[in-house]
Length: 168
Image 1: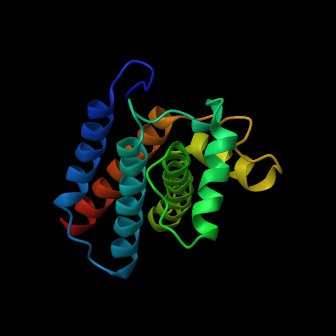
Image 2: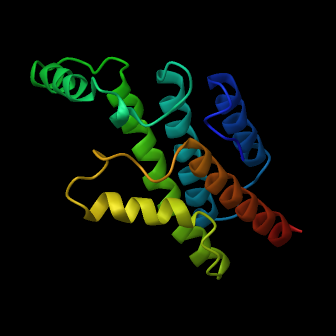
Image 3: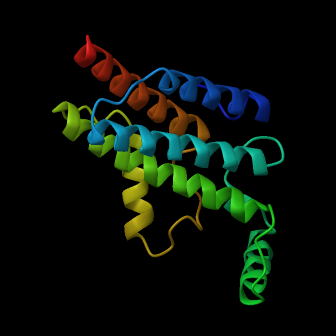
């Protein structure tokens, strides 16, 4: 696990690349495994984009005092049919996508392996909060990039270990 308060953007991206590398050597044996690996790749990509777009490494964009104006700028771009430019809002969009994918992967890996390990429990609870609370992420998040990466790393390791044992 890495601490987003003490590491830089390059370290965050390198950590995600290491998770992707763990997936790289796997050979999905069926459609279920292929779908699980695909979900993991989507989560890695989302977190990587959130980090790439951010200036110093991903952190909660809602804490930026300029966030309301940033959001309104994105709305103006969309209403004009324009592409969304890299911005703190877009970084947060990708981070949310990563969180949702990690939470779903957590449930799917548990079902496939036949366990209730909840390896990304913090992310799972945060996604439920974001889904069900009206204010969503406006007040900030309870998980950051380090918790997201830790949960994703545990899920990928669990899936990889299961797939490798099954293949042997």
